[in-house]
Image 1 (cartoon, protein in one colour):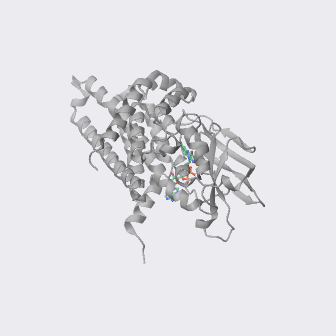
Image 2: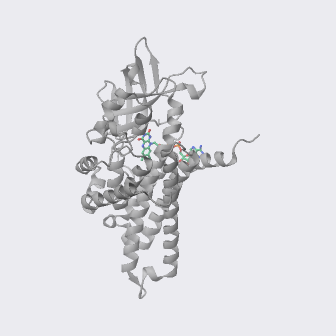
Length: 383
Ligand SMILES: Cc1cc2nc3c(=O)[nH]c(=O)nc-3n(C[C@H](O)[C@H](O)[C@H](O)COP(=O)(O)OP(=O)(O)OC[C@H]3O[C@@H](n4cnc5c(N)ncnc54)[C@H](O)[C@@H]3O)c2cc1C
C-alpha cells in the first residue's frame, strides 16, 4: 500500500509528462476567461489512454482501477487544475455505465468516450434537491412498450455537449420505499425532447459546459434502462463513492498546483531583507500544507485501493473527498496570502486554482454531508 506498483508509477509519469508538454499557462487563462473546452488536448489525452483508464479493455479502456484514474487526475490537475479537470471530467458518470450497463450499452458508448469522440454526462441533481440525489421529481411513466420521461436536472457538467446522459428518475409508486423507487436511464443526446440551457458566468470549472437539462416527454425503450427498473437507488449509492474519489483526485492535484507555485515564489521573493520562505511563520504554514497534502493522498490512495479490490469503504471515500477538497481550499488560501498582491492577479494563476477548488468542495455532497456519512459509520446504530 505504501508504494505504487511499477505500472502505476509509469502511468503517473506519463500523465505528468503529457501535462508538461500540452498544458500552457496562457492557454489556460484564455480558456477560463472565455469558457472554452480544451478539445485538442482532450483528444490527445484520449489517444494516450488517459480517458477511461478504469474502463474494461474490451471497451477501449485501460482495464485498470480508480487508483490509476486518481493518479492521472492528480498529475493533470497538478500542472493545471482547470485544464486537468476538464479532461478528467470528459467521462463523467461512466462508472455507472461500466458497472451497471448492458453489453449493448457499453459497446455503444464506452469506446467512443475512451477514444475521445464523445463526452458523457450524468444528470442526477435537481433544482429542488442537489445534496439529496434521492429526492427526485423527474418522472418516467411506463407506457405499454416504452417509457415516457419528463423532468429537469440541474448543474449538469458537459450538459448540451455530451453524447449521452445518465439520468435518475422516479418510477415507483408514492407509497413505495425510496430504495425501490428510482431507475437510471441512459439517454442518447439525439433523442427528441432534450433541451439544454447553459448557466451564465460561474465561479470556476469554467472550461466545461454546465447546463440545466430539461427532458420533455422523452420516449425510451426498455433497453435504455441501466440495469433494471427500481435499481437506481442502489446504483446511486455505489456510484457516489466512486465519484467522490474522482473529485478527491482532482482536489489533490489542485492543492499541489497551488503548493508548487507557492514554494517557488517564497524561495524567490524577499521582504525585510529575507526570503519569505525564511520567516518562521511561513515555514509553519508550509509544514501544515505539506502534511495535509500527504494526508489527502494517503486517504485517497487507500480508499481507491479498497474500492478496486471490492472492499469499498463509503466513510473512507467521504473522508478522501472532504480532506482533499478542504486541503485544496486551505492550501489555495495560504498560497494567495503568501503571494500577497500578486495572488490577487489573474496572471499568477493561483486565484483561478482557488476558484476551481471551491467548485470541487460543493459537489457530490459538501463537507457537511461527508461528515454525516463519516459520523454515521463511526457511531453506528443508536439503540
Ligand atoms: C461545479 C459543479 C458541478 C456539478 N456537476 C454535476 C453534474 O454533473 N451532475 C449532477 O447531477 N449534479 C452536479 N452538480 C450538483 C451537485 O452535486 C450539487 O450542487 C451538490 O450536491 C449540492 O447540492 P445543492 O446545490 O442542491 O445544495 P443543497 O443540497 O441545497 O445544500 C446546500 C448546503 O446546505 C448544507 N446541507 C445540505 N444538506 C445537508 C445535510 N444533510 N447535513 C448538513 N448540511 C447540509 C450544506 O452546507 C450544503 O452545501 C454539480 C455542482 C457543482 C457546483
